[in-house]
Length: 314
Image (cartoon, rainbow, N blue to C red; front, side, top):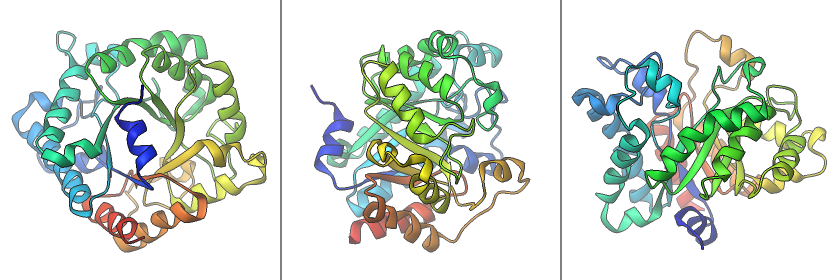
């Protein structure tokens, strides 16, 4: 039995990804992100909920205008059980409430809603740019199962574990997601030399997860990585088996042509002109056969609109 994501992948030459959400909220006047769950608590505040809705509607409007299928992610990147408790939200269904918020927004788009797939977004427990903080595979499987089950129960179309810096925790996240029965994707941050932040080659990481987890991920993505660095990573000789080229189906790109270490140390958000971003990311569809293309840090509706325009033309 296929679900909405699998149907869109089978039927569409390319799928548009959303742009940045958290970074845009961080720069929005009057919006306060929670120190524990980041943007997951905003739906319980009138102005916060309105700010979230405005950003998601921009991405939905772009997808609808260009008639491209769209992937949206729930605002649950940091909504694990211990963070929810630390934020004083233990009595609320934070993952379910955010998932239903986004599903209701999608469903308000009539016929176009059928072209929009919603992922339940998860990530690592610690700092996404510090692989030394990664959990072991066994510990991560136990730790992340609670959130994976909460998102699956809320009715998301698929699960996505994103911004992963290390293989060990990625294995555990994959196990937790696989146990729900939903299709799921794993998304890494990549170095230009073709490795995860922990030094594992992409080929090795993918082969290890595919062998260790049943069912294996539907596919893999790279996120929070510039298009030029993504290209270098996939073409690097460390990935000579071409497994990475076969299993990685997309990029959610940031706008800074910096290595992950440089980006983590950057005090200011590095931006790129929307036209430059749109051209460079869209080119990956033909050059590297990418199916899912969208944005991450530094992007806004103008970047995603330029990207969508390029994708719709080709």
